[in-house]
Amino acid sequence: MPRPTTTGLLLLLAIGLAAIPAAAKPQRIVSLNLCADALVLRLADRADVQSVTWLARNPDNSVVAAEAATVPVNHGLAEEVAALRPDLVVVGAFTARTTVALLRRLGLPILELDVPDTIDGIRAQTRRVAAALGQVERGEGMVAAMDARLAAIRPPASHPLAVVLRPNGFTAGRGSLVDEILARAGARNLAAEQGLENYGQIPLETVALAGVRLLILNQAENRDPSLGEALLDHPILAALPDLRLVRVPSRLWTCAGPEVADAAALIAAAARQAEGAGP
Image (cartoon, rainbow, N blue to C red; front, side):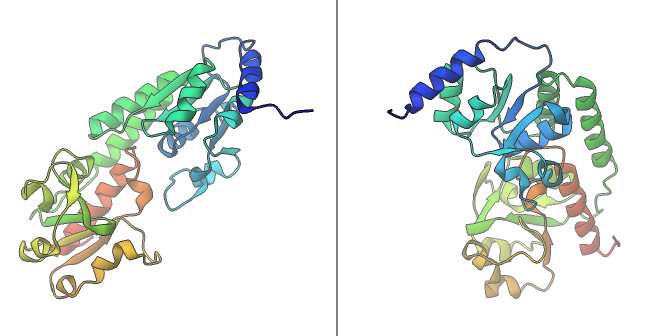
C-alpha cells in the first residue's frame, strides 16, 4: 500500500480541522517562534498551550525555559502543527514562510508578530497577543510590571559612552531598540553618535579612539568563547584602561519583550559603577 504524500496528509488534516468549532478564547495554541513562546507561555493558561518551539527550552536564549520544560515542543513543520488541531498558531515575521503558507492554506487562524524596535512597540505587541489569547488583564499586568522595572532604573549622572558589540563586530545604532535601551540605562550610544542607522558594524579603532567606557557584550558570564567573538580579545581593547565590560545575557534582549527592562537595569548598574557611584 503506497504511503500518503505530504499533500495527502495535509488534506486529511484539513478535513479534520474543518470540524473544530471556533472558540472565543483559543484553547489549542501553538507557537512557532521563540519570542512568541515567551508571550504565549506567560499569558495563556497552561492547559491551552499545545506546543512551543524546541528553542524555548534553551535557557541561554529563552526567558521561559523552565515553563517550557513541561510543554510539548515542535520544530516548525506544518504536518506536526496541523496534527495538533490548533485554534491559534502564533508565528513571527521570520518564521519559515513555507510552513506559514501551508498552515494558511489549511485555514488555520494565524497571529503573525513583527519585531518591535521601540519599548512602545513592546507594549503594543504584548497587548495584541494578550487580546488574541483572551487574556487582556494578564497583558496589562505584564506591561505594568515592565514599566515598573523601567521606572526603578537609576541612571548614572555622567552618561558614559557605550557600545554594544555582538559577534563579528555588529552593533546597534539610531532607530534600534538597543539604542532606546541604552538611553533608558543612562548611557550614550557610540554607534548612534557615529551616525549608524539601525544595525551594522563599527571598527575597533573607532571604539578605542572615542573614549568608550562601557563595552556591552551580548552574552552571559562564563560562556564558552566562539570565533565570532574573537575580536573582543584584540589588544587594542585590552589596552584601554577605563573600559568596563558589561555582559548582558542574550535571553534578555534577543527578543523584543518585557525583559529588555532587565537588560536596561543591568547596563545602568554597570554605568553607575563605571563612574564610581556604587551599584
